[in-house]
Length: 481
Image (cartoon, rainbow, N blue to C red; front, side, top):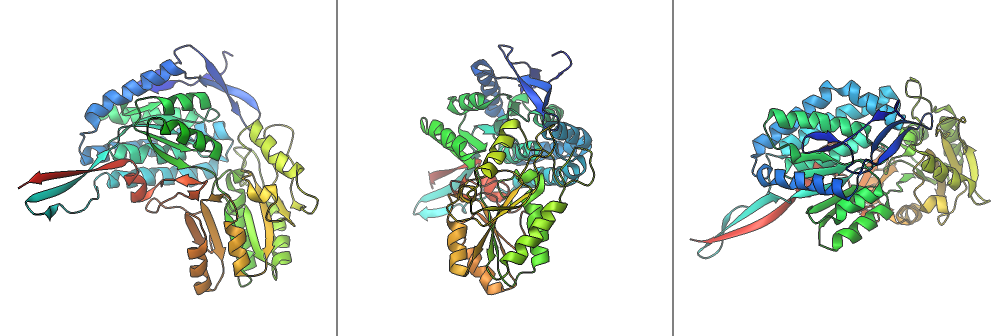
């Protein structure tokens, strides 16, 4: 055990072990072997972190927007300066390819933190005025308080940014729990954020990190201190958070699962569609709520499309952190490998595996790029989130059936339409019941635009001014004149 790296909680500006000394083993998914330990935080640790955040909120809530902006800009500079360290931590913890992690995640992280730094100085509200004779009304937009936040394992450091940046920008304080399998980069972010807080002489308790498992998350959400609970995770976890938060009417922000339909019409450029969809489906081993995993193709081009997609899958590589020609690394953990494998093992007789469909190697949690055709709308793999490098393909006959198939799942996070017909693209974007509709592309995100879904994909928005406003409350002040 002594040769394992030790990760610690970050509470009130100090790195500390769990109060009772319990730990969790952190596994490198490329080898399946433990390389570190993290605290297994319990009730005493949650109490300490919440007390730290509450004490900090008493003064940080009054920090001016320009002060909050300075804080976030310093954090962004710190992330940029320590990019290589963050990438090393993230890759060791997730097995992601190093080059892609640096190019595809560090830049967006820095950009998003800087976006929210600007948002801190752009508080929106209706104009003050006399809406009743003899009375002046004023709108105040205020922070909600202490925020209990739970981040997922698919993009640990990027999702941490999506959590803390808008919360801090709005004047809240944070207790953030990374996934029990991927705490390493979040602990390093705590070091960067702590240094920025100290430099600006702001309370250390503005940002706290608690490591642990779902029990730790439950204790955070049920704690009396937080005014808001925010989670990115599974539908099951989201339902549990909403149920717990309802007991004392906490505000809840949920970004949950997805099952993105990718609707390819007969006039689409097959080569361009296959290239875009294969990358958007297999990137990060398909471990993305917006991944292009459920393709609906017009019957007239179905066979040609499937052939081309299967070829693209066979040419897509998975491998280790330092392999330069791979698109993605391993699945995150042994349970996820079992889940993905199970979907393929349970395929109905009418389904056909066109490519992949198997584990790669005996070491680590690697899974081959997989394409499955011949599926029906009610098949398990069509209806449920696989969260792996698996793309399903169904055929449709007309626009009505395409819409019915696309909307015929419990998730409603993201979707895309591939067509050269502008009017059709506009009709589809209106009729698709998803929080995002891409046209002739799939998966790009920008800080200025919202990310969030409907139905069982949750509610609330990440990114954008809408995401910022989710971390504020509106107060009406009326005075006699």
